Image (tube, rainbow, N blue to C red):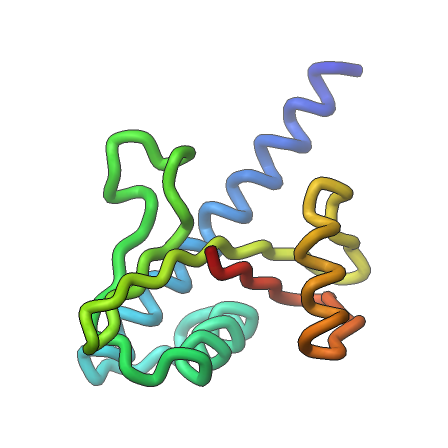
Length: 126
């Protein structure tokens, strides 16, 4: 039973890591004038949302560019003002719910954005 749970967690982590890399690459493409249509819809939706929040992005880094990825936010945006914005992405699929450890994000979205449907993409800004 424990072995199966580990496999589920590993698969979930792979999906999340892939989403981070896809969002990072799509953002880099947009910043350099390249198309993003080859990316999954959830990636494009996430990138569009980030670009609406921060239209003045001049650079982006991801946690996999560091020695210890687990100790860094998923993305770090560099704005034209030289301000850095740290972002963590939460990817859910289908009717999946936010894990209890992420209830803060869920209540934040409901309170400030009147958003109660968290089906595809959640972003937290640190």
